[in-house]
Image 1 (cartoon, helix red, strand yellow):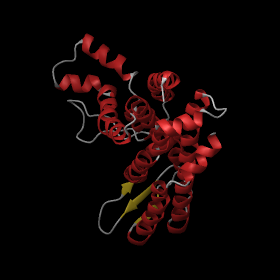
Image 2 (image 1 turned 45 degrees about the horizontal axis):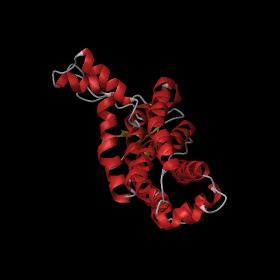
Image 3 (image 1 turned 180 degrees about the vertical axis):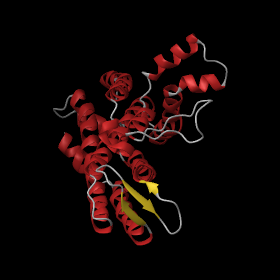
Image 4 (image 1 turned 45 degrees about the vertical axis):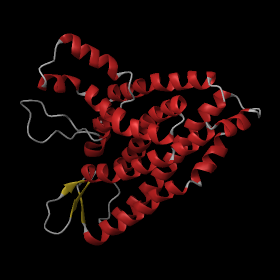
Length: 279
């Protein structure tokens, strides 16, 4: 069933906007921008006109945000349609287990996301080769890691909400506008609680525990881009030290494990509810 899901998702016209936008952005950057080598294998410098040069990590973070948004809008439509009573009854009447029905959805989402991310990398590689004669392979690996991991973290939330509500619009909006920001608050709870004067041991411990129960898109951002929330005595600009900024020497395995663990509760609950759901 995974291969069928992949074929159907690749036919999703909303997702076609992803590679189209990637090509258009590359053309605009190549025409109006100035790309320079940063002298390493994980970044480049970008400027336009008289504007100061920006690091590639900042630029990539902004651009990939569009691709992630397209994926968040387009990918859940497939699972949402499969949960409709008539369609679900027809699919499950065939020799397909509910486990296969559920797991194949995630396998297809990861595969399709990797395909589109790979296309994005190819477009970026051509742009950098033509404009600056560079091949920052660690940057390409970072992008190939970042986009699918972020989409997986937020898609787990969407799937749980779809199983509970069957409402595509509500599921996407709640996951994107509520749960994703909530994961950021929980990840940096001690800093926020300090601002509010509530940084007691009980409150910090409670927030830390809850952070393992909500899929941490903020953890993916911190791992890959390294945006730190500035504390009361911190500099005005947050530190940027993630993989897209400093290459895989900055990879934090502990944070990566935390991201995966934070996705597990929603995934298991979705699977349990899916096994018991009546159509």
